Image (cartoon, rainbow, N blue to C red):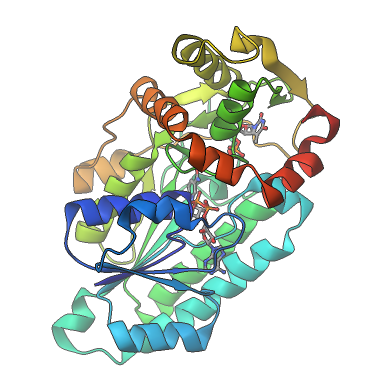
Length: 354
Ligand code: NAD
Ligand code: TYD
């Protein structure tokens, strides 16, 4: 079996669902259930004996040691993290605790577990650490895309904490020989994404007739990847990646934020003409820019294509269509999210513009 962390969050939940759709190998899913963790994401596999959910912290050494000893996973995939740049600006401490200190404690337990293994079991074990392109910093309009050898230059508390975790993972390979794999991926979108991130936030607000907040001039560029393509890339790296190597994962879909928002608005005009305000573009509102806002991210994904034969299946147009359709078809999931802690966050971040 495999152990994954953060599997009640956006990408982790998509990964668990994809994994079990494709394989009968069981998954232990260790997740703390922070505001971003949501068991509704896993409702379709409720009662499935191949999935064991455990609520807990990656930094809880006794819990992690017990899970490893009891279930003896052949691989571990670490999705668990605090993941939202804006929250890291308001309160970086949780990011240091989970992404840096938590990853350190987790690595220590994984190292002890792997050290005690022998033979084929030991040789086949892998620790896959899921990271982000944001560790590479910000690109100018004509700069070449990030490669696996681009120097780290994180600019937000989020990306700095992820960079620190990547460095620890790297060091555990070089110092202790732990067979690690690291993936650095561009912005994901798709089903089950918590609506503090741009794409689900815009969809939810547009359908409710609320303003669509664009930070600054809206010309910041992100390289968008459909979450299902990220999951298939992780499976490819886990299956055939070389221990100690880093793989960049990207969608070849560079878009400005304003283009992304306009595309969603046009799709909703066609698919959801009954919204309170149409055309939906009328809701676009420019708001104060994010502090330290990275201008452009772009991934050079040639290595994973060349070495592992992976490339994304979705274009931005096909992926965003699936995503918009999913949010429209799942109002219960959206309604469940849009309460309590989420409302509190929207007031804090967007104030009277919410
Ligand atoms: P998310 O915030 O939706 O989910 C994170 C999950 O981790 C949640 O279920 C949360 O409960 C859990 N978690 C948080 N702290 C924990 C802890 N201490 N112990 C155990 N579980 C904990 O994040 P996501 O968007 O699914 O991202 C998953 C991973 O992928 C993160 O490591 C993130 O840095 C990385 N990543 C995300 C993107 C993106 O666009 N979303 C892009 C590249 C890389
Ligand atoms: P986000 O989804 O938070 O991802 P990241 O910061 O990890 O790239 O933001 C994507 C882009 O959209 C980023 O340039 C910030 C911008 N943005 C807005 O313009 N308005 C918003 O309300 C949000 C949440 C993001």
